[in-house]
Image 1 (cartoon, rainbow, N blue to C red):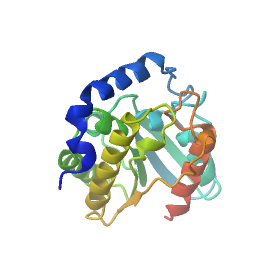
Image 2 (cartoon, rainbow, N blue to C red):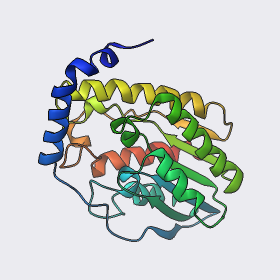
Image 3 (cartoon, rainbow, N blue to C red):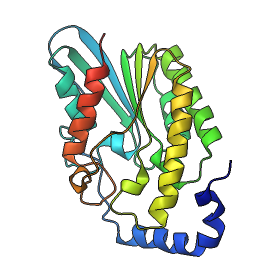
Length: 233
């Protein structure tokens, strides 16, 4: 079924394009979080953790990896495990980019993999069907080649809640992000070792970084805690 936002994209195209250009020009470009992208912390049974994805997995929005998803999640898990963690993430990556990057990695085993992808698929027009197909390929790779026992697939965030985006651009991207997230949930349901983690952060400006687009340190903390609560090895 074709939705209202899809039908209106053509008549709204000049407005959407102007808003997208305006957002890009005025956006405060934040760097990826500084600091090591791998390390070991905690005590207890060994847990090998991979965090893969886009700018949110790379920690854009905070100054250091300690405040980003990687550091916050490693800290949470260190209460129960000796965590050997690694980040493979790049700003702007779509699912197909992450798939290629991980395919090029040396084959090692990971107990838990956390993925964060989808926003760039939304903004660059990836269809829900193609997105689901690529996510299927990614999950196959993580489970078959890297032997992941548990894959936590972060949902596509509802982009209409991003403070940096004006209407009607935020509405169009919000509707598309929900379609891709539904396709993602369906794809994940086919893999017994994978879990879809739907975004349920508070609708609060404090959840956004200074650019109004990426997570804040508090958002990363809540996200990390939710993931940690789902991991039991």
